[in-house]
Image (cartoon, rainbow, N blue to C red; front, side, top):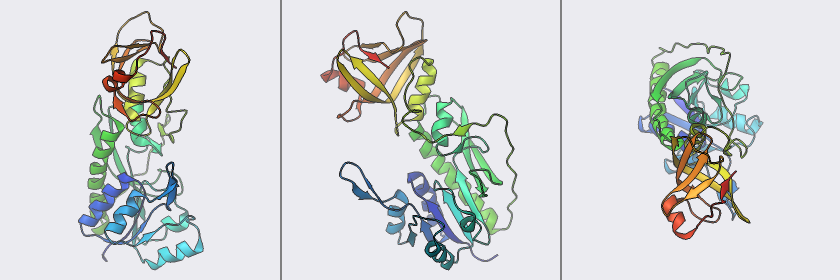
Length: 315
């Protein structure tokens, strides 16, 4: 077979780990496609994607189309003369793009497909209390994450593991999966499996303010899973009220203990070192959180400078 000539498509940190693995293993990367630069933060300073930053450091050819169907972009892509495209955490591709290379376009997805198709598979696996997850490579088709599977790799999810910790492990597992997939394609040994259609599909919905908000009437373990499944980003949040003061608070780390009590869910109890919130079936001990205008801190640090009355409540 002729040498692989790869176009890589991706945007966030997760994709950088995979791109680096391809680069370090001496595959020829003829182009990198990533999101356009955009203003970010309070000063609206122009920010570039993690993938672009890496690609520039390695002197790789970068394209940043705003429209994937634009004739100018399609012409540039064609001129790269790639025979394979690798996609990691990018956006949905039009057929004219994914059908372009002779050997096809494959995607790495951070779940065991067909479960958790969609934008946030790492977060939702933890939020839903799954005990295992993994990565899957598959050839792209005209729907989202539905193409024929090349291979998958499984890993357990730790009882207290956060989305950030799992992200880093899956990036390594994903790197291994992509290398194996490239080797199968290079040696013409690829076999694919069509995805099952499952009755009760678990979906990795896009995260937004509503589905990141804590509902204190939920069981404590559900709240605990939400907190670790959204840590460190975008973070589970809730309002806290104490008298006339109200804050929008982000929660990053906590432990949960099931116990019976007579307190209303959301009731806050603090000591000099502990920040406890009662749930319907136990107590959540918050160990890391962020109040507006302050940096993320350990609960005992926050309680050095902030006191709460017995009427304080999370809702």
